[in-house]
View 1: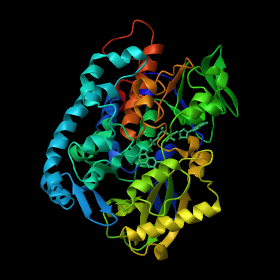
View 2: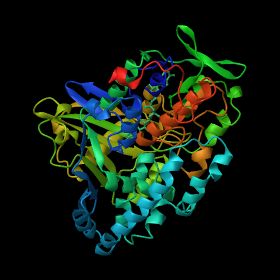
View 3: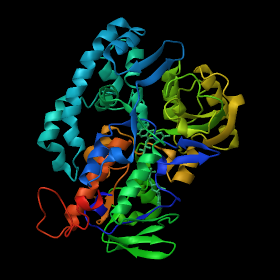
View 4: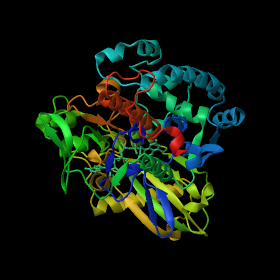
Length: 498
Ligand SMILES: Cc1cc2nc3c(=O)[nH]c(=O)nc-3n(C[C@H](O)[C@H](O)[C@H](O)COP(=O)(O)OP(=O)(O)OC[C@H]3O[C@@H](n4cnc5c(N)ncnc54)[C@H](O)[C@@H]3O)c2cc1C
């Protein structure tokens, strides 16, 4: 969308028959499910990208801000309904610990400062070590507390481990445990409380469709069912892509495929100096997920739009996920009950449930995802759904689709099924993450969860902006305008496409 708007001739090669990847939808028997992302945070970034292209995101997609953020259900109590309203939030957190409830405003105020300090850092590229020591980074550093985990940092505010969980389970959005996730990411729960959680009507795919429509207006063409088989390199530089039809030449290649998977499958090891196969094998990856997409007869269960159900043995559950060797029978769950907000997701008189159970990623010596594992995981997920207060769901199931870590790898091209990509430990962030202007292969620009700033939709959109600007800057005829990078001549002025 951004490159097309800047005047580039862009072709998107997509392995599947539609856009979206992990953010696509499953549509069957009148039911529609988000495949992956369901928590839509901070649409401001996307709004700004549309504006930059002369478009109005809110004319393309209807975002509903949820009144309540989510239901947070601890297995052995209490059950909370968290919202952005300060009084209600105080009341709910008091059910865990009244002293902690009084500390919430301080936690939010501190994270407001942290968010403001880190936003500029997350909005620019890290092309080299020099970028680590720039002014914005040095200003933010005192708030970084690099040796602390999210949980330990929260302990400065909250004494009760459950309160800490209420503000740290969001580390799972990065596929990490709050005991390992760097303290920077306390900003995730802050962002939910500060800005809210949104549901795009029609599901997350509606946003992907809006981007495709926008891109098409700028002349971008989409080639579906066209897997890239390899990158075409000439003297180490990317000069195109190879599909089943042959080589398609290009001045630059933007790579959105899962980073580690694309590196190991689409480029020769010898072409990479830093991100060799050996180095990739040593990296840390996020957890994976076991998914159930259920079409139910009857109305949606009497629960909120989002429910997080936390195991009474969450320490062991986190450890089991990290080790990836067994299925935890005391698993935690996340459940999306989208029809309470958006009845268009199911036929009249029916509803949908999206059930996510975090599990270990694929690794040597790890759990083998065969039919028996799949059946065991299904049994556990359905039992935990009952424990989480969703009643007898099984007898109402009229449609069911299961996705396992092995499916994430084979059907969605996700390395080790680690759906949240390279882990976000500090050794794999900023300068240490694969660079937006890919350092190993000139002519390649990375987008998606495997590059800076990281995984999760808002930062992925931000990363797309960073990579587009680098590409536009690199390929624009000199001298480059400083106020706004642009190819020249620009083919689609904003007023032509409104
Ligand atoms: C279950 C789940 C829940 C999640 N929940 C949230 C959430 O609530 N909020 C949030 O912000 N994030 C969430 N995420 C994370 C978010 O989905 C991902 O970070 C994001 O979608 C990844 O986007 P991407 O562009 O990096 O990769 P993808 O979406 O996987 O895009 C890669 C694209 O490249 C295509 N491709 C791959 N290989 C080839 C090839 N060789 N040739 C042609 N095309 C190819 C793929 O088909 C795909 O379309 C969730 C993820 C999952 C899986």
